[in-house]
Amino acid sequence: MPEGDSVWRVARRLHEALGGQELTRSDLRVPRFATADLTGRTVLEVVPRGKHLLARIEGGLTLHSHLGMDGAWHVYAADERRRGGPEHQIRAILATAHHTAVGYRLPVLELLPTAEEDRVVGHLGPDPLGPDWDPERAAGNLLADPARPLGEALLDQRNLAGIGNVYKCELCFMAGVTPWTPVGDVPEGTLARIPAAARRLLAANTGPVEHPRRTTGRLRGPDLFVYGRAQRPCLRCRTPVREAPQDDRPTYWCPRCQTGPVVDRAIAGAGADAGAGAGAGAGAGAGAPSASAEALVIAFNERITARDLAGLGELMAPEHTFVDPAGAVVTGRSACLDAWRAFFAAFPDYRNLFDSVTTRGDVVTVTGRSECADPRLAGPARWTARVHDGKVTQWHVYASS
Image (tube, rainbow, N blue to C red; front, top):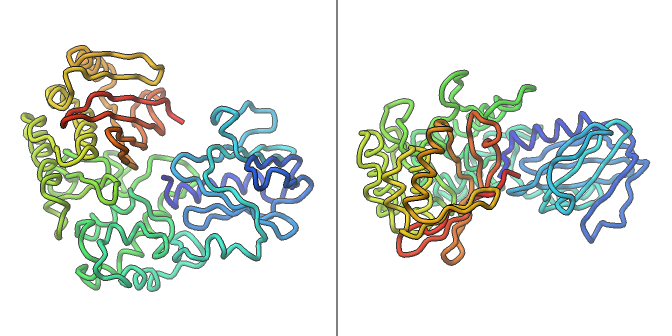
């Protein structure tokens, strides 16, 4: 799911394209507002509020949208071909004489009086990138439930708006505590600094030139301290970074730099074994977690990132099948490992970063993004895996959205 900095940049693009301009076309493709016509009205401004977007329109109206996991707004020149997805995924079109803004796969789209915006965003805590920012209030909100794990409290938009899973992991690392640490156990001075750090990190990623999200401050080398770095050395102490689910989200931490409780040892310990093996250059496939289907799929992806064919083989069922974005199928563990061997040789920097992992029955669905120097393989992505008897029986990669 896009985080506050991403939504802030979307709002800026929309405002630059539509702000102060008269709408020459409006098309809201949701049943409740399908007959609404904003043509002839001027877009006054487009502003972000946490992960929400508010397009304020002449006549006291606001078009409220939320990107959810897969939503996106694309801006095109008036005569430019749209390429954000198939036509049936379009939820909104707003056009001026010079630009067209198209909203794809928006899970939330509603038109309401501007005076009633609090009805949709009034529950949000202070926004680190907004005019209402109040770090003391944000810290107080976090501490309101002292027994709650810090990672969960940071993701609760009622405490502070705009923090997602990436910043959750990075902020916990910078605070020196695990995401499972109860808020009340975080040292008072440390807790007070977390909101300020959140604002600093988000603001650093809202510049005019878009680049991969950075929290390390480095122009070269890794962009993030721990997120997406399972099995890789911590940038501070070189201990392998660990990964385990927290509230169905892949969560990363350094076991040496961060103190406090961790998740169920059956999962966290297996991740540690895999990380230690990768760091030593051997045995990375041993100790694969079997505590949950999600942990198994996370471990499977860790083997992909580490280009660990032996580890992948240990997690595959003999009848394992691989399905690529074009629908081509490779069947059998041996054939799939040969395919991965060729893929790793061609694209040695390829890796997947998970944002969300959910399970229904024996099917695990993952959303996130792929990173690779080859742009054809980089961008938002989705995967599904089938799991049976502690093995992955199918790995299906879907085309980037």
